Amino acid sequence: MLRSFDAGYTYSIPFRSLGQICKMRIRMSRSLSRMIGACILAIAFLSMWELYYHMSMNDEATVDVQKQSLNQIRVQPPAKKKTMEEMQKAQSSHLDFMKEQAEIQRNRRRLLDNACADIPPDDEIPMYTKRHIYVVDQYKIAYCFVPKVGCSNWKRILMVLNGDRDSVDGLTSNEVHLHAKMKFLSDYDEDQQEQILKKYHWFFFVREPIKRALSVYRNKFENYEYFLSNKYFHRFGKEIIKKWRKNPSKEALESGANATWPEFVDYLTHPDEREKVEKDTHFSDHWREMYKICSPCTVNYDFIGKLETVQTDAKYLLKTWGVEGKVSYLSSDTSRPTNSSSHATYDKYFGKLGKQELTRLWDLYKRDYALFNYTKPEIIP
Image (cartoon, rainbow, N blue to C red; front, side):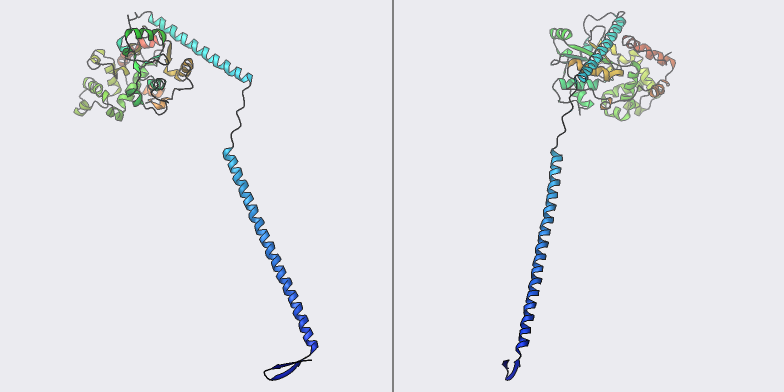
């Protein structure tokens, strides 16, 4: 037995009780140790699981980034090489196209020559024609432009071939008409003109003559906003209203705006009255007869194009020059289209004309019809 002295008291603890207490403490220590060990293991397990989770997520993100990078840098597989048969077929198609178009040109030339048989040629190219022929020396091209026959697009092409622009895209009609730097045939001396006549590729385009006249009217006179902004046509509008409108208003006489289609036809079909106004080369060429502009019975053109087949004609012409990869003929949307060739539009306007006006209009343009093989319109008496 042990004795304990505390604050003056004496008491005793039996040895058996003391042993039990020790055993209990040992058991508690062991339980606590096991609990602490379990907690440590649990914490370690959780830490390892969290580490594994983040590593997995990082791996997935890395794979996604790698996939995205591969998608960004992945190049298209090389184009399948054409077989010898496919290349031969393409070459044959090209040759067939060129032969077909060459035959079309021979027929147009033959018909023109036949029609010219009754028209004595000029001793030399008229100055009026020389001032309508653009020359591009680098490619040996001479182009006689006829207004309202797609000339804006051909000027775009020649500006690129002449080195004035890198591309036909973005060139406005105003730029090509006012800022083209190509030379005219009239800018060369006589010896140079003779060489150009002999060695260069000469071409021009035409269209159905009376529809061309309607296109001029709708674009230059009927389009009120365009007319007001284009001062060059004001003098013609004023003369038309002054001469051919009954009781015109003071405002109409001063502005020249809103001339009607029948009034315009009256103006066209009275050449003596026109001479009083048309004293220069420019602007009146929009309705002048096409043969008077390009003199096809005097100049031996290599190519005669038609607006009605312009896409095919242009393709052939550019291939002939070897420049189809450098330039292209744009659609009419890039110019000032009027859709004057549609049947509904044609009937609408020509239904406003009497037999006398229609007959005079035919007389004005009938030589163009003959030279360029256009059929006389059914509406003409």
